Image (tube, rainbow, N blue to C red; front, side):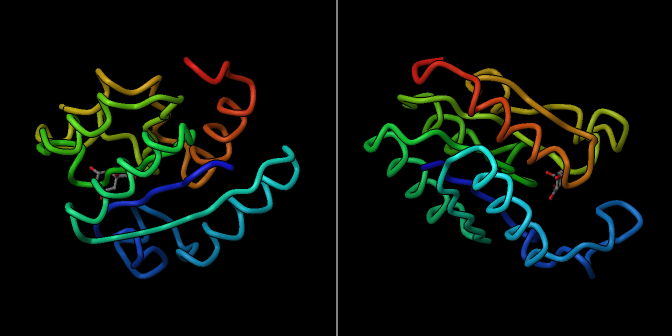
Length: 144
Ligand code: DQA
């Protein structure tokens, strides 16, 4: 099982700034991740929340269950030390993903406070960022 966790405003994919995030909807993202998991032989559960507390609870759940995670922390990426501290407890791979390339956008997006505790980061490939991350997790050792 792999958890795909999404932070604030990602439930609005499709209508949210389509020039930046594309025309595909959150439902399309869920289908894409599940289909990719099926190809790789993994159950994939996709969740989205606008709440920092809920996201942290899901990261704790992954820590306790040694569940690998693909995480798009959305805006929390840039300032949430609480999300970072939760990820620091991880017991399985966790890959940070972004649809856009934050390094090519506004200055405040250039800092990720979670990158230093993730297994790695994939950014800038649209929804394919999630596909690449799921492939990477499928190839990784459980403790990476
Ligand atoms: C994002 C990039 C973040 O800077 C932004 O706050 C998001 C989405 C992305 O997937 O490109 O909400 O994480």
